[in-house]
Structures are given as structure tokens and as C-alpha cells.
Image 1 (spheres, rainbow, N blue to C red):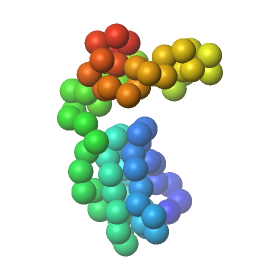
Image 2: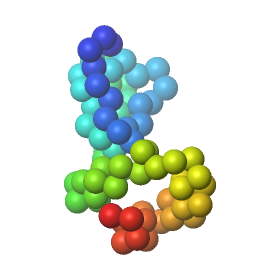
Image 3: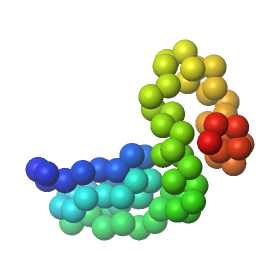
Amino acid sequence: MPGVTIGDGAIVGSGAVVTHNVEPYTVIVGVPAKPIKKRFNDEIIAKIQESKWWNWSHEEIKERLQDFKNIDKFIKKWC
């Protein structure tokens, strides 16, 4: 819906109608969309957001791609 903000890393289910802002790294589904779970705990979410990895260059992301496969290793290395 107009004016709604979808947080970083959120997952919106197919066909969901989002009527409220969605927090970062939250999974939402349904009509109207409702949160069903968070992808990570609040501490991990805060650290991911602090890393601002989405501002890394394409080359940096490419070089560090393996680090994205394990969130604990990613946080230790980049946060």
C-alpha cells in the first residue's frame, strides 16, 4: 500500500497485502499481511544493519560472498 515502508531484509510472501510498516528482517504473509517470524534475533539484526553491507561495492560483495553463507562468521568478520 502507498506510504508503507518495508524494512531491510524483510521477506514478503507472494500475494501479501502490506498495510503497515514492516520491521527489518521480518517474514510477513497474508491478506492483510501479518508477521510470522523474524529471520534473526534482535542483536544479530542490529549488527547486520550496522555493517551496511548493501553499501559495499559490487567487487567487495563478490570477494566476500562466502561470508554471507554463515551469519555468525559474517558478524564476527564484518561487524
